[in-house]
Image (cartoon, rainbow, N blue to C red; front, side, top):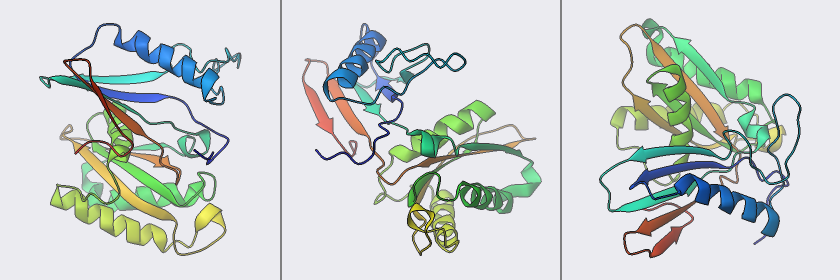
Length: 230
């Protein structure tokens, strides 16, 4: 119940399962209510005029990614993203010949360039493959996995460990003031891609790593989790 940062981020939602009636409108009402009642800082503005409606709503905001499936419930996760970390996002369209070595180099370059801006120690989300837009999306989805849950893909798990060690050797440290802990962890996801391309996306999350999940069952009951469901 204590504030961790004055930047409460922009509202990003991931939903999966059954498509509930009026799902998007319900989320919009929830964001507006949370902004007023918690309160959340009204961060959402028009990109050109910078007009702020004061309720964290706007065209394309809140951002909702929905994956329909045969689940008998609807699961909704919110991932607030502050600007300090979001502004450090990066995308590279590598060539396949650059391979894992190129991925490591790009991640290191991105985190070193970010320095203290994203309020380290951070959590690094890594999206490998897909198309350019999908790589960015799965790099954000990677941030939903808990730090104490190893990647089920052995190759990605090894890459996560290697990058975590390398990034913590940069000496950037907490808040960029120097030290041995620059990242709390690296979380990676992959998607199949074109034979001629290797998209790589990095999304950095600040140390708070705020998120919460609600699971709405067919009978209308709701379960909540701050860490996500297994």
